[in-house]
Length: 344
Ligand SMILES: Cc1cc2nc3c(=O)[nH]c(=O)nc-3n(C[C@H](O)[C@H](O)[C@H](O)COP(=O)(O)O)c2cc1C
Image 1 (cartoon, rainbow, N blue to C red):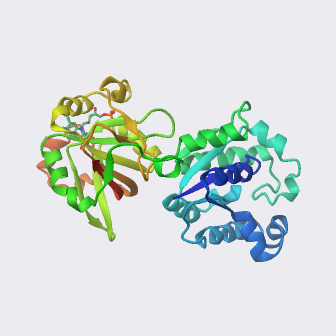
Image 2: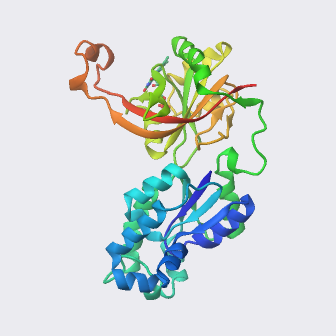
Image 3: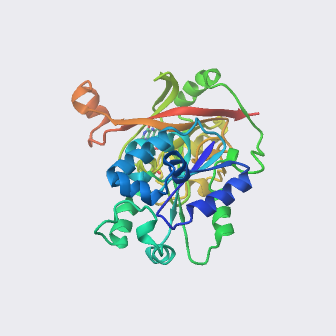
């Protein structure tokens, strides 16, 4: 597993990344440093020589060339978010964390703007660049750490560690769950759907996780990967969280807790903390950010690899009035199954 820190130049990606790597016993990869080594020039010289657009391509290639990494903390340059390809690669291979520093603190930390190899500054103010980039960092971040002035480096690293899935923490999973092959759990999963005992857990960028009952879904192979597909209507609070994050978990409730599934299929996370109200325990997953539910029997941890909207014009006409009287057509989320655990 890997972690990528993104954010403006001056946010502290290098110093925090190094400290994080030390604590986790991971490798630290500074992408700017790799580029400098390759060209045998300092960053500013490379930017001056090739120009902003070519530098973005150079940076993109440096990211795509990263070894199939494992146990690494990656610190790319602040301009990496201008390459959708690089960000897609990082999102697929790591947990992307945005170090969200205020403009004031960035301004104070960057004394030498013209020699830091900062892309997009020509003829523009640092504030313009900050305002342009922040939404892009937010778009790609799976997690955001707000760098408040009262937090020192150790406190930030501690906060990052708290936000990581279980596998990346020191310690590990203390539950009585064991990993199993997803293919051995398909019958039980279908039975769960049949009996209205399937819960979908999503976690947005901020706030607690949310749980909702799902009645439709399927497990199979697509793109040579094991895929769990779930269907979520845009009106659900879960939809908002699924759009903010890149993963989800599917959990099968024991028959004795069927009333919980009934509740989670009617109350909304907009107005209710369903975990709290129903005494459910969110415990860290092994591979994804969304937690699993301790009280459940079976858990699938899925990273979204594709999503698309139901196309009503291609749906058999009789299904529409019966299932979509309000036109609240589902979005399909295709999640690669990264881990499957069951009560041991
Ligand atoms: C048995 C059952 C199955 C359900 N299946 C789905 C489903 O597959 N997709 C969906 O969008 N809503 C489904 N729902 C409705 C949501 O669970 C329900 O609207 C829930 O309150 C949404 O919660 P949220 O707003 O916190 O996301 C189902 C409800 C029940 C009771």
